[in-house]
Figure 1 (cartoon, one colour):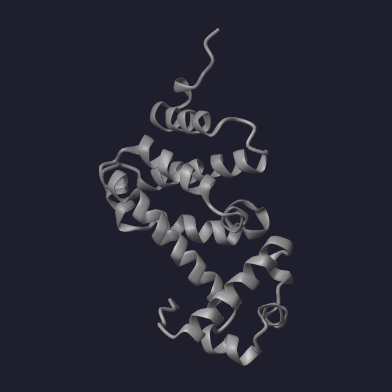
Figure 2 (cartoon, rainbow, N blue to C red):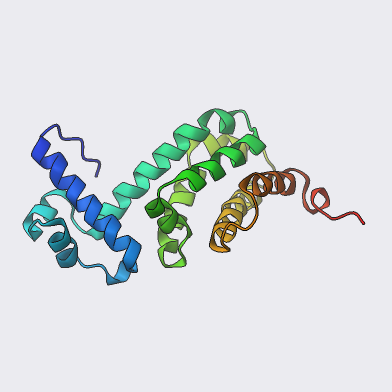
Length: 186
């Protein structure tokens, strides 16, 4: 449920809910967060929360939808032209430049459900459907795209030890040229 009220009180309440939820995300696993704790942290009552959301899942769905929309807007032109290397570049920069909450939601194993939903929504978008339609085995191509997101998550979880541009270049080579494109030549 997307909230687009012009009422300043509603905007302030929604911001308080989001801020409290983000604070809790950074310190707790999702299954440890309760509506009671969230509303106390947001300094609102439960009824106020339920005026805007049916559950914590509803709030998470809204955050997921916003992230998917942002990401699709960033990669729209390159996905349509099938410029895979630029798509990877934009995607990795988007993830790397995101705020700590976005990184936690997309990279922390505890929030794997969030990562799966965002990935599925992006890869099921109209932009990617064309990409799949021109291949003989769309399911395999989609799995390759999921692997690209997993590379970022692994890099991030490993402490970002490799420069981002190297990860982008390596991932692009791997996707475009397969293992032969990255094999060490001695």
